[in-house]
Length: 110
Length: 117
Image 1 (cartoon, chains in turn cyan, purple):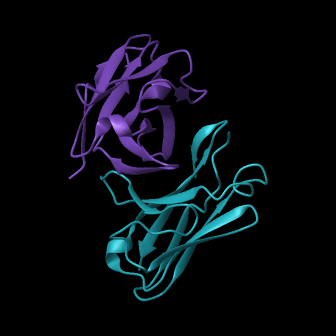
Image 2 (tube, chains in turn purple, orange; image 1 turned 180 degrees about the vertical axis):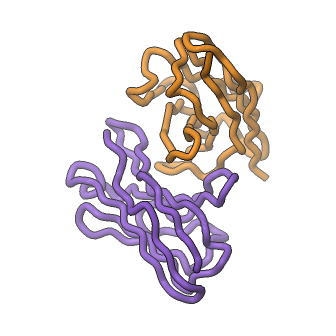
């Protein structure tokens, strides 16, 4: 199972929206609604932000939203804040291959 | 609250072995799948292995299959990773994480494993 493809970096000014894509194939992202997203600020452990494509765990701000179209899942951060600066990873679980992570995207708040 | 604390990392020579431990607290450990996930310096996340709540099922990434063994002791609320035949490319921070459905809801702070001569 190859890593899912994410852009290396995205950036935006405070208050703007940014969207991170996570591209797989029709056999993985396209076939399952088991995409999740993790936030990893520098020097810290990852934190779950979105599960099953578009669900937010308790405590995650509603500025974070997820969606999927075809073989690509997306994470959108609306109303960007300085504290959102971090690396973000998508992840997918399949019963055959276990878990696969995306290549990671660095979000920079300008 | 949920706490996961990894230990056992360190410097080991290529071909050597190391055993990582993860002490869990704040939840009913025996109810959850558990995973090991690693992150090489400056690189992305890589899932390593998971184990079912009763140890009846395990799964491994191809990169570690046959060299690493995951296990758990529910009486001690502990997760383990036995790593043999270590290679330079196994150098990483190793995280233990609680599985909940298809996601990892809680992560430890990680323990660094360095494989170098």
